Length: 342
Ligand code: KG4
Ligand code: ZN
Image (cartoon, rainbow, N blue to C red):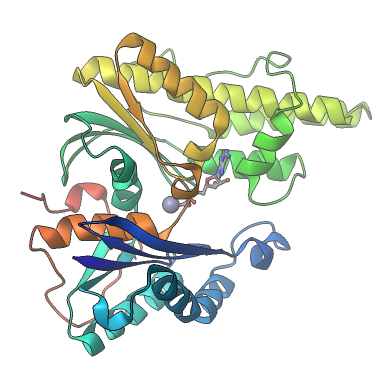
């Protein structure tokens, strides 16, 4: 089964074709960084318009790269939510129309399930149950995965998501957008031990997170140096490195706790923040404790069409498909509402 995957939930237009027999045939991502950078964050209306502009050409490019025509497709999977309403509508309308015109099924996919299943593209034999750390711009969740569609939320953020904390901290350090990669790059030149930022909620039981206080700690510290006219490049790099280390340590601590609580022997990580090299290295180190650790290649950590095509292929293979041609999107959509895949 050849599934076209369409991702338009936020500021990346992602298109891919996944073949259940041959794996990923081709994928293309168009990033809107240039569109939004000037504003310091995503402008929803501009995001929708950019998806309209790029979706069709990307589908053509992806088909060409895979040597297929749209007539060779067996189904279309698209992101139904969560995400920006207008951006989701563009992808859903395009996908449903294409599927209808080709006479093939369409299936709406939960964006976070796309992230969650992405590591399985490369590691299909991951033992269940496993723990999933989903860290993106809008979500920070620890989930126990018993099987596909059987998800138990173990912990979530009480305020900012991990990616949001990176983005806001980058903004206050005037590093630009998107903040995660900017902080990570600057942190390479910094001393992560110089500033002792807290590891939020580490002294409390459970797997919840809280990152907004950490951002405030960075702001307070930076302000001290600004007021003294001493916020030089090295201090900024040290702030970035110390902040990043605090986030990484906190995420790893909670992952370890989730593994202990559940007894799971495998851990996956996905979502934009999982592209962070320090976080990847820190989680991989858990393998020395007898845990299998998997995460996608960096290009499949941030938003992409391949994860939607793959999640779609998984569910479509189990017989699921949209029951109507009507266009439905779910800008807010708890992962727990997904049906199980038998
Ligand atoms: O999954 P994603 O592409 O979009 C959402 O679904 O939110 O995640 C985007 C988030 C942004 O907050 C971005 O700053 C963060 O992932 N991010 C990173 C890195 N690359 C992207 N955070 C830390 N380090 C990175 N290398
Ligand atoms: Zn995402």
